[in-house]
Image (cartoon, rainbow, N blue to C red; front, side):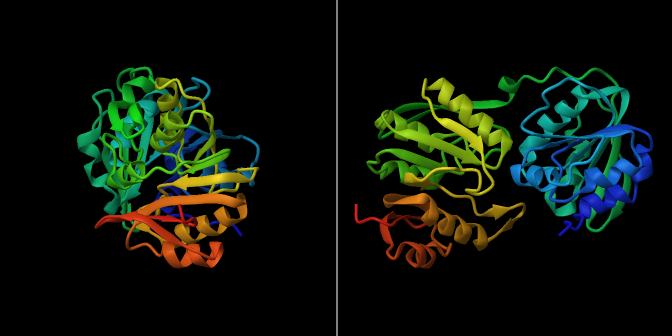
Amino acid sequence: MTPVLTNPSQLILRNRELVDNHSVLILNYESDLLPIELLENTSKVCALALDYHHHLQIEQHKVNNLDLHFGHQLPHNEQFDSVIIYYPKAKSLVPYLLNLAGHHLKSNGQLIITGENKGGIKSIPKQMPDYFSKPIKIDNARHCLLFCSELQNSAPKINIQDWVSRYQLSTPQGEITICNLVGVFSEKRLDAGTQLLLEHLPKMSGKILDFGCGAGVITAALLKAQPELTVDCVDINAMALEACRLTMQANDIKANIFASDGLNQTHSLYDGIISNPPFHDGLSATTQIAKTFVQDSALKLNKTGLFYIVANRHLPYADTIETHFKQVKVKAENNQYKIYTNSII
């Protein structure tokens, strides 16, 4: 089934004359096939996804003159006539995307920014760096806005280290250096859910999966306590995966870090699965993420394996875990979070 265009994509499409005969770079594109639609007007389209699910969705429809990438930046320095940015859900990611756009625009190149009104795009005029002209509102429809700007001066070269929030974390497992990036969950401090998990980190063995690894806090603590473990760190977010790599590097820790849409790209059974799992899809909270994660985890875990997660109290994990693991225990809890496990440890 062909994905329906999101509202921001529909707004771009109805203004497609803006990119007639242009080479176009699309940054942070959404869950649809807008990059393919634009090929009718443009000379070529390059698209960079920061969400692995979005990348996989369009990759299966790959066509000529469409260059697809997943990651926090492009593997080349090509410059384009126009760059389109989808305003991100995480507002702190905006300056990074603007820097990336400026780096890949030709002199006097066109910047197009679109997003949902409730997502914060109204503040884009205040967020523009001085190497871009003042953005002009071009269209307003489907609860979205579309702005245009022009590259006036050279943008700074992209250096990922400029976007790192680095802090020291004292844990029961020892001192850890955390390197997080803009747009990643709990960017500048440890979140309360992960803190509860670290206070009750279990003894584990064999091969472990850290699902939704974020900046790698859980894996860093786990390997600090048990360096003999083999840990796979997976996430759907490109910035999170890069943050996790930086955290492992800063602590001289080795882990396998790769993108996975849910557990689909994991290829082995695990002796343990540990997580502070995500429960947001875009701007909306959804219980389906929780249910799918538990169901898939039951299939990926060895019969004697340990399932160990921390989650908001209001999420329906207990019933789902009991359904797929036949038992559920609450290892620890506070007024916000619970630690669920399939074990009596």
